[in-house]
Image 1 (cartoon, helix red, strand yellow):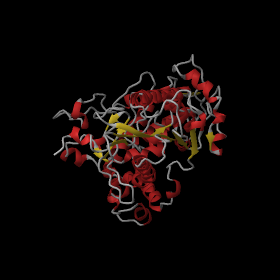
Image 2 (cartoon, helix red, strand yellow):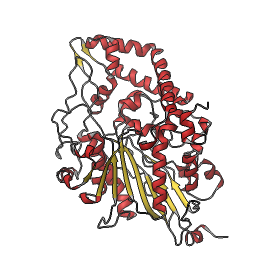
Image 3 (tube, helix red, strand yellow):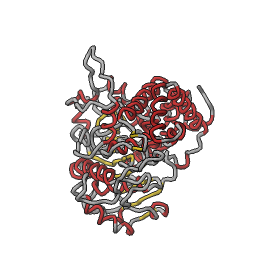
Image 4 (cartoon, helix red, strand yellow):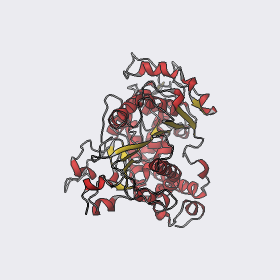
Length: 497
């Protein structure tokens, strides 16, 4: 019988840090619709093997989350950098690839509250203005040379920097740029400096980026890449346009996905209209700004209010008065209640499984190709939106309790590590995945053994990593079991529940 150390000398191991998503500042559409949880995760990190799970204190109940505290957590002001569990793992492993999905950074609101002044925020970049970053000036200069890169036409037509002295709707702010410069710097210290993921000369195609066709996602991705590889060679970067926000590519045809989302939206609507305090609050706010309550609701005021809150600006005022922090708190409280109800009823999960599968399937395929030694960029970045990330995080297999954090925006990702001599990978359709392992990080925390496909392994095996075969089985078949299906196509085209 081999010991763990002896096994490392006879097998090839791979650690795939699967997911590590996102949240720079979680936008209104994500938190208001409660597509992900809003309760903060404890900053305490268990040591050694106990990091697999957090052991609750017996006979204690967590305090009721405070709406204002939640709003501060949402803001994710970039004032410090944290490593989390990024790059931590058993000795004797070699990093093979990293796949990262992010949500864009802090942005200007997408909606304006009628008859009030828009938030006064400057979206030009100025290294002397807070929040700033030591690399901000160099980043600005480097973006001016972006014409040397390989661009899809849609992305090539977008500005590489936010540039309006009065922000346009949805434009990335300087805060958003700094958030992702900081994220990239955090990943650089781990994956580039410590694990030597990229060769010093950046030879070959080493960086791959995919972005939706919005300037805020493109700019966020470029900021992270610059933090990761300062002054990267534009000729070594491939930037591709993703036309669908779910990153579903050729697998977007899924009628049941839309039906499940409609069911979840009806649940949300019923809960909101039954909330008498929320209804009175919207009526009071509407009288303050001089519009009908329905018009105010349609303007999604929380989107603008969160921008005021996070940028330390006074709430909007009109001739009759100002919107108050108490009114803001009521809306945040209802969001938190909606999240609790969403978890209990589980309707959103059905949509999330079908929305997340195409992206997970693509990333699993990339990991397989990297493991088999095929030509594959060791670092790939997907820059997306909350509606992209939310389905992936909504599955209890991925996340613990929280989304927005009081830390640098979470970006922690698909990465791979292997070590030892020889290879446990076959070279054909029936190739074995023995000796390959997957690791899951979210917002820098190791949540591998909180996933549905690795909980049993945690209980029954002494191996500190999750077998990659478990992940593949989850993506290809097991994730559809809540829908009484065994394939994506079947789950998409007939209702089995």
